[in-house]
Amino acid sequence: MDPASLRPLRVGEVLDTALTIYRQRARTLMRAVVIVVAPVQILSAIVQLSGGGTADFSSSGDSPFLNGTGPDATFDGKAFLGFVAVALGVGLLGFLASQLATAACLKSVSGAYLSGDPDWRESLRFARARLRSIIWLYVLYGLGLFGAFILCVAPSVYLYGAWAVATPVLLIEGTKGRKALRRSRQLVKGRWGPTFLAIALGGLLAFIVQGAISALLLGVVASGANDVVKAAAGAVAGTVSAVLVTPFSAAIAVVVYFDLRVRKEGFDLELLAQRVGIDPPEGTTFAPSPLPPPPLVPGDGEQPPFWPPPPGWRPGA
Image (cartoon, rainbow, N blue to C red; front, side, top):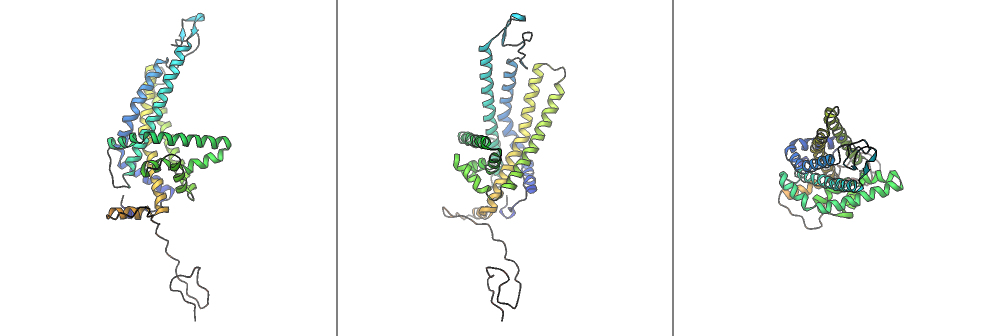
């Protein structure tokens, strides 16, 4: 992105910019997500079928967890525990796939600001190399939100907004763990309301899209479909939802992150300096361009038009 075009954005402009980047990089973003998510969704469907689809536990049901049929059927605890263990494993794989896909999308979207255009393979390699740090960050994030929710709902809502850009901080700046959460909170400080609103609106749009896709695909096969068709529809719905929603959510997080840096740290000036080959000394920080002073109001008195007096002001005769 041209540094000259970087400027503070309103909430609506954040969403519009995220959609623009999403459309421009849709092919790369979607490929990165589908490569990671589709295998896990297929595995999840297989596990669901191995558990008897809807898993009818009644004595008359045809369930793999029952030994025998009729009134004499007994519950097979070992088979059930094995199924639960496999299901938890698949759930864990789904979580890892989601984080990997999100990180890959964040890498690709950040290229719009950092003069890079990584393909889906490069984005996935970048995300995979940082997966352990991402997992640890989300463990801290989840524990923090859960602890705040136990104390009171309000602190958890606050932390949700304050930590909204923790993942971009980790991936773009290399700051990890609690430092990434603290850095996110520092960036959001003073801009919590707009940040929370942008992230919440993006999440709401993503939720609507996911719900519509799931309802459409699952509604088609709901009547009279066997377990295989239902499992396949669920896998397709999960994959399509992730492919459409994950890149958009990542785009919003990245746009919010860079907007905060432009506002607070003069990131546009820093980026411009890098573009023209100026490597600032380590520890150098850039400040946003100051607002122009208010227009001078002439007067005959001894008091300046505002305080502190503008440069060049002299008391009247």
